[in-house]
Length: 153
Image (tube, rainbow, N blue to C red; front, side, top):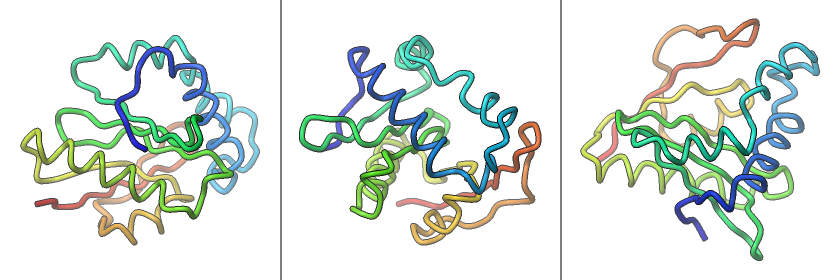
C-alpha cells in the first residue's frame, strides 16, 4: 500500500532511506566513510519532518505488513527527489509501484516531463521504467549522479 507520508513515519522512513543507501548503494559510495557520511548527513527524522512541511515536496511511503518498506518524494516542478527501498523488499515490484505513484502525482499537477538524478545502482532500474539519460554525470562531492528524464502522459 502506498500512501502520503506523515510526521509519525519519520523515524521508520529515515531508517529505510539510510539502510537503502548503506546496503544497496555500495557501488556508489564504495564504503568510503566520507562519501557515506555526506550522503547520510541530512537523512534524519527532523529533516524528514521538514520535508513534509515543504509546499514544494510530496512524500509517499509504501507499507507491507504495517511497516514502511519504501520512501518516495517528488517536487511540484516535476523532479523525483527520493526513491529508496528497504533491502529486504527489493525485486517485489515496490519500487516500480512507488515510481508510478510519484509519476501520477506529477501528472496530476500538470507535469509532462519527470526528471531525476539516479545513482549508478538505480540507473538500470530507471532505464527499465522508460527513463532516458539526460546529460553527463553531475557530481555531488566525489559521487556521480546521472540525470535522467521521462515524458509522461
